[in-house]
Image 1 (cartoon, rainbow, N blue to C red):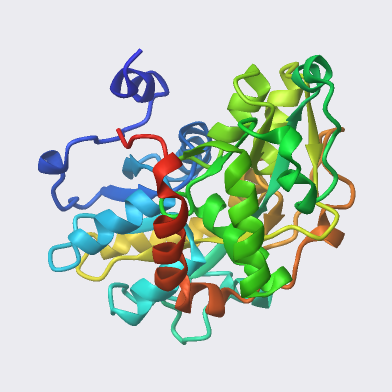
Image 2: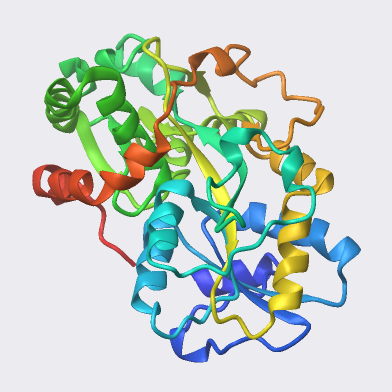
Length: 342
């Protein structure tokens, strides 16, 4: 099945051709999003329950691909709203003056960690996700290799060719891992660790969820990904264990913002008001680990009980400021094992 047919089957108004994108009119929004396609479908359904009069046209891809698109279009923006984009990218866009500042209704209820320091806000934090390992127990049993408990364990030669992780230049999940390793270990030791990890990597994917899906399918033994994708796959019967590294785990914040120059500011503001609402937060919380507004949810029995304790104290400003330098160094060292871009 082609990507176009798959997305169409999900019922999403996702446009795949740059040439077909135009500024949205009243009652219609073009939204660039970094969330997974099935999650976008779910969030869109929740939004449409209270705003059936606003049509949402979604452009979905990994964080790095969307970020590159936004930069390419910065002099003639095609999107009305950016949604589910990593704060590291959004901080840089804000410095470039690409956003229409706006304080969504109810924003004051959010955890202060999810708020832009500028007033009115350039962007608003919505939810967050962490990194984890997906470990295929069946494949491990066949190969008679141990279950890793830490990031350091992944450098063991027994895992050579058995690990896959997201490319940090195209995936927000990949970058949060690299940024976290540098913050936890210090830069010199982190690059040394990544050099050793690289020896065991089979491929770097351009999706944060794909490594876990590959591990679940037995294509690779270990996929570095995020817990909620692992939980969903485990609930479907995948033979994987969800492992949070003993040293701690990085996490990233997903944010939303209105693009400067939108032709439909009124509806863009309505969307952002909804994006920080309790109903939206419950929707995020059913798919991701952390929400900007605490909400009560019935968690899966596979949800890691110690996740809150494993989240590192993340310096998002540092991660944003250093992103270009870190990614350039990462590409120089490891990009040869990245999968081809579609």
